[in-house]
Image (cartoon, rainbow, N blue to C red; front, side, top):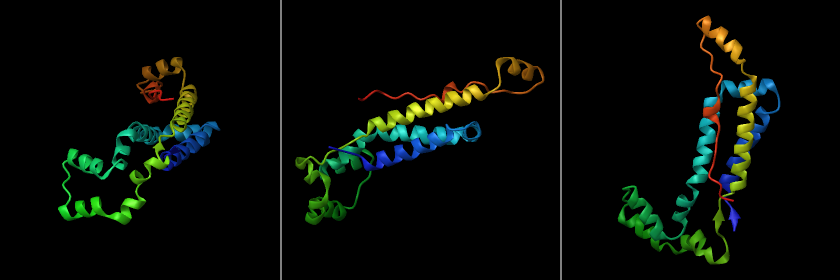
Length: 161
């Protein structure tokens, strides 16, 4: 069993970015200014992990690929599908021929857990950098809008370990 290279690299890249932003207040402020972008990136990473099992079914057999294509209403040309199913050189390279050799791929779930932990730590750090409740009340009296609640950005994942 080996970890998915794609998921490992993607999680590591995001984790390194989060570590950078979590080092100093000025970096954390830049993160806060960009939080909607990073929130999208984090949600996208979580989705990649959550959909891994379903997506990995495409590597089980040519029939599994056909089934997934059909489920999405994609109809490849018959010749292309036949070539795919019957292409012997390709069949030798593809993962489903190597399943018996222990070449299964798994999701590196610990990498995601580490990202989520660092993410929530950074969101908490940013939350603590925002103005106090007392200032918020004063600002509202002056007609200013103040967002002090970052709880909508906190992340949770299903525990798969």
